[in-house]
Length: 228
Ligand code: 5RP
Image (cartoon, rainbow, N blue to C red; front, side, top):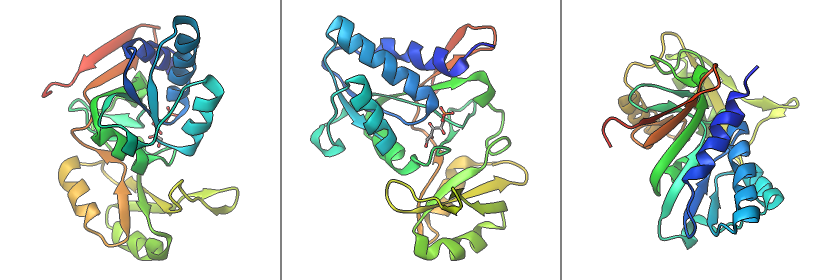
């Protein structure tokens, strides 16, 4: 079977040019991008500075020999490569399956170009139909926010090894499985951001410029954002 994550992740490494500040996303698809980037640094002498979106990406960057800086040390990020859990035709996304949504959104918002790498199974007609929406909340407010989110569908607090899962920022994650998907991602994001205790949502609207889609037949389709 074709490894769609590897195909998409490795393909995106060609977009990096010497001298760039590069946002380094999080997840198993991005891991392939990072490995290929490390190879390019080693074999081609590519020079770049990476901005990591998670502790796991920090560890991978060390593993692959990718030099990194803090977000505040870059005037801007030239290019970011990140994954997604769902992406629709308007390039709105659900992210945060790996729990890195907050840092991913900060880095995406600083990026001149945000490239998303996915297998074709992540491309959906309607967001919220195949994957729950992760919402990062301060642990103190998790129970309260959870009640408020139950009007949308089934809400579960993310766990890991029998304990409450905590993000790199020390927050909890509520995963919301929508009953009928998400009608209007932009207004939902605004409404969710207004709930006290919500730190960030996994809805990414207007942040992606290009999507690299690995197809089941082993080909790659590159789509550029219709409104960019
Ligand atoms: C992490 C993310 C990831 O990009 C998303 O979950 C996709 O991950 P993977 O490439 O492992 O399927 O948003 O917070």
